[in-house]
Amino acid sequence: MEIKTITAPFTDEVLSQLKVGDIVNVSGIIYAGRDAVLPKIVEMIDEGTLEQNDIHLQGSVIFHTAVSPAGVGPTSSNKLEIEGTMPQLTAAGIRMHLGKGALKKETIEMFDKYNAVYAVIAPVTALLNSKVKAKRCVAHPELGMEAFYELQVEEFPCIIAAAHGQSMF
Amino acid sequence: MSFDYNEVVAKVADTLVRAGSTFREDKKEAYRRAIASEELPRAKWNLETILENAEVAQCNRSPLCDDTGIPHVFIEVGPNRAVTGSLMSAIQDGVREGLRTLPGRPMAIMGDDKARIDMSGGISPDSDALATAPFLIKEVDEDVLRVHVLMLGGGPAIRGITHRIFHKHSIDVVLDEIVARTKDATKMLGCTPCAVAIGVGRSQYEATALMMEAMVYGNFGKQSPMEQYITDKVNETDVGPLGLNGKTTVLATFMKVGPQRASGVRVVAMRPGCCFEPRIASVEL
Image (tube, rainbow over all chains, first blue to last red; front, side):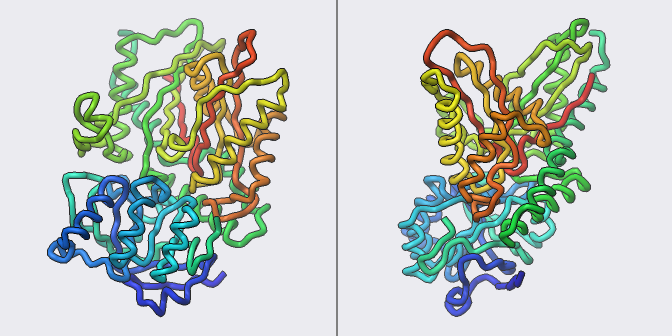
């Protein structure tokens, strides 16, 4: 099996070449957030306060995970507050939503308008721990493990589950 | 008190760490069989990755999954053994010690009833603030005091269902409804392959207790005809590992049927355990 390595943040050219079923290793700077914080990130988009908090969503990834001493691993991306914020986050620049679980058809169609993709990552926390090279809380530290983090990651193994209007679900 | 308090704490703590970091051999063997049977390369790769993760977690005694789960304790008590309040306190302390060691994900919500529901009380930063679910205690013929620690994750809790089935005097009606519920659940779960746990009882409480018992005694290498039927039917869906297609949506089904009442209804608890469940380890005290 061919495994491509792609580095975040992504260019449109890289995203255009991704196909459903591709196995990719994701490296680079990505963001991590889930149920509690993503609606608050949408509020920050509306208020225009992301840049002043050194958060840059253009071409980036949001990994749906908590960040805690136990490690990282995907939560269900089809939870109300996660899938429900994907339109605003995608419009604001996110180009890869990384998690697990089936998404709605309309969400997958929405991604296509922005050349964005959905990737699935196995909940393999023991393997992922050695691939997280640095982490930094960038917003809402009061949410503890559900705060918004910036992660520097190396070769996260992912499968493209939805791209260009196609999906595995 | 007729036991060594510190010894019980240490044994239970070690058991919790093993539960959160280790696949039992029957589960590893089920994964090997599934890897050998998958034809779709990505399905095979997903299963290999999950098994590799388990080997690394066991070696490091580190969490299999970042959702380390809510601790549940199931105790078997033989005819000449006793569970006292002090023993239960020691087990609770062992759970807390285990959560600090694993470490458990700090996810206990603080505050009063309302605050714990809407999360306005905030999240405790301490791994050991996570309260244990109420203990289940079962009398057994074997002269033993055995503690099983299970760590139950959030994904299966979202997709699990406890609800009645009108049986219409047909086992097929009940099994097919269980299959239908499990198919829907596994489609949305995301962290397949599942170990499906099922309890059939007379009340919601009894069905759920039986479902827990099914997880405690379930063996991936032994399937009753009813368990195998459910496994095979759900595997027809092609949901596959991580929901990305393949033959292996369910690795095994663990089903426990309790006493039933003269009535047209059966209460069924179904939990689609994720690819790591049941996360369980046991110790004799």
